[in-house]
Image 1: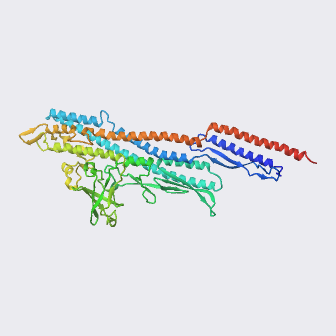
Image 2: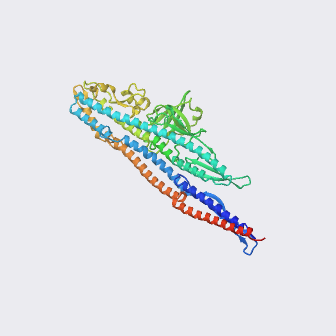
Image 3: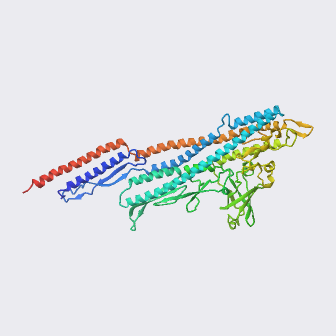
Length: 609
């Protein structure tokens, strides 16, 4: 039969279970507002029955308190993190696109349209009074306002690119910090769980870190049990975290780190890029693959904003190789329309990296040939010349196919318009003569990068020497010829076939016609004044798409998080009910012990001799 004190054992097990449940309920209530805390519950089971060799066979032995476990649903965790990744990408895009939209806001004083309209009006004033120096000065003033507009816009976009670049560095540092914390937490979890205890709070901490990491970059989390030498579960687990399309970041208590390496002036991808843009590598030197299509999250949004070219990047095939002692000439043929137009050219003018047959080389200069090919000068000192052997017919590229309208795209659009517009007006005015019937010069030019001097008409038109021509002119350095600023009478407003036949404002009339005639000048199917509308349509489309997607993912975040919280979150009303329930259990278990005390008192003190 069962021991006389068997009932006391049963009662004490119930007391311990109720006490554990009360403490757990108190812990839940204390953390009701703690971010990332998962509701905990006590897992119990009936103790193994005791064989008493009586008619009824077995007697219940009370309750076993197995563990305190947190309530968590991995399915909702995965859904939440996947949504956070998409939300993070659209968040940064919407933020920076709103800034681009603000920069290009066409206000009534300094906006493109108002400046362009003033320039058109001043041209008409010259046509009405061609001999007036004042009207010419007024026109040149409006042209200077136009160049200042593009100079400022160019500077604003470069500053924006610098801001995005700095934020990329911040995000990379944050990934490194989270990776280090995850490795530490993983080690602490395993130390505790090797004893058979579940590290609930530490697992919550790890989930909070993973939630934050998922907003920066896409993640894949796998947890595998570890076994001892006999093949039995040890209690420890191996937590593996991969990012950016499957690249290993954390493996248990080991972790990898990323580093940002700034590009030098000789490693630029685009002509308009600022110096010091970061490339991302693992600290062991392996390329992170910052443009891989699998990556999502804030980091991808920032990279696309900084480097997005809408798919227009240099690519072609190697047609010829010519070796010298210090350099190698590489002839590359291209087929894309945007690569055969120097107005659309984005290649760096200070050299950069070129990928030939999946091998990186450094070029110091390039020329555009009359047959539609490019000739690149490869620096043999920085590049392994031996590796370039056999590259005939290989694919070549500079930069990557980034199908997003980021900063480089908008700057390239500005460059294209200003180059074509400046060339068209320069051609008209150089066909004319000055007020004293002398050959006129150009109106638009570009300032040297050194800040001293301007490009001459010959340098801008000399496409035979290196095929670049107006490529040297950008929205950042465009200006009017300094001689005109000093003496407006040198503007070629007049036309003369010979000294006896002079048309006073013929060239001005041609410019007025060019401004509105799409057959004479067009930009993306619009006339000269339609530039900003084209760009703004791109900006507004990108902004609207980002904001719509952001709103969608934000709504999904709320919905998924509510579902997740409904399972793992602490409900005050539910815990209040549990508090009463476990209090009653504790009271009853105590009452049973009290009752047994009376029984033992009667049995021991009042029974027998």
